[in-house]
Image 1 (cartoon, helix red, strand yellow):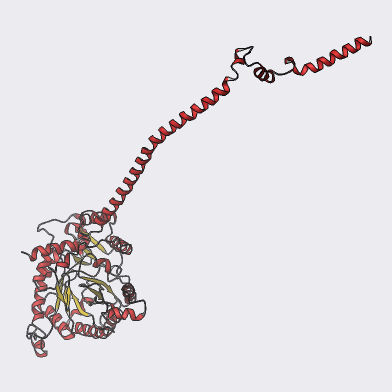
Image 2 (cartoon, rainbow, N blue to C red):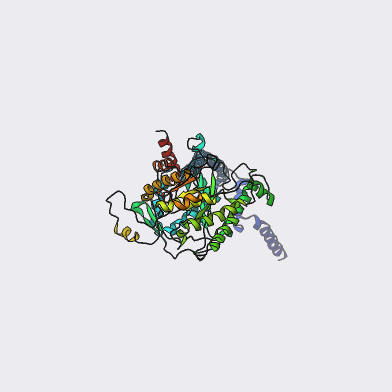
Length: 528
């Protein structure tokens, strides 16, 4: 019994020692590797015999996969490089094309010779701004903004450098005999931008002593078929002090840019001519004219009050002007044209000349008077010429807008119904229809002024009795204004005795390239 128990215990111990190695007591996953290691050539199943292969195959496959992937990547990179290069080239091409387009557009759009200004921009403005005054303000505001950024239109190539159009006015050698009349730049917002369009004379204003709104709106009307306008602005002005401040700042900026500094003395040095430019225009070969007028509310019968109005303006703006223009001919200020009679006109002009001569500047501004085309009788013209001589005024601007309504051109043309209604509007008429009368008036003023000042006895006894002007007396200067739109018309005005041909309405309808075009046509006329 004891033996049986011992035997059974031994067997149990043997089984216990044998169980860990029995394949029936373990999972196949733990058995198979040991069998494979112990018996590498033996396998019970096909899957067991193939078990070691996947490890090597995976390694080989991985290597092959890496190689293939590398080859594919290389191929893709090889393909992508030209694509990237192509995209880079296209981007560079687009950028270059855009830059060239902008450059060409800038050069073309800012050149006064570009036909788009006349045939594209002007019709577009009329379409977008049915009210002519709105169009006027838009044009001035945009020109001012473009000038600040250097994007404004300008003459290119310095067409006046050949000297073919040069002329002498008030001792200055002007680059050409073309000017822009007052009204286009009423508040001296853009004189420099206007100079860049090519004229040798730019007239700003008119300014009045105190600010005034002018007449109620609407007050500007177009007659497109006639390239004409009717306006009754009524000398709207921000006042002489405002204009003086604007013109003063212009000189201060110029002095600083020219290296004179920002001191008060710098301004005076420029005004005294140290910059070798006219003190008004600040541009060689060009002159700035500033127009002055009386306030609407100043009594027409009080000559002393009227004189104070003009003198007040002169005292403020004369320092910054090359020419002062006395406006006594606006048809839209009641009673103003009555001041063209000999006695009141002489008194006003004498006061203006005296004030101009007292300006604190080495060179004094010249004084001109702007007269109406409607005062065209021999008596009226003689009286104005007498006032010019007696007051010491330096010249006359012949022509302004007219209260008359000239016949349509060409002869026999019937105005559209809308323009026939516009023709009945109150205000001064301007346009090509005034040209013939303007040239005729220039010739008459030239003849009378060249005869010199009348003596006291002669002026009392005869309106036509005048003495021959002494040879040492400077010749009175005449600017022609009214209906000038072409080089041929400018040439005719100069031939009639004017030194400068002024334009306003012609610029409105012809666009900013009008001055350049007129000068080109004038060159052709002079070579005939």
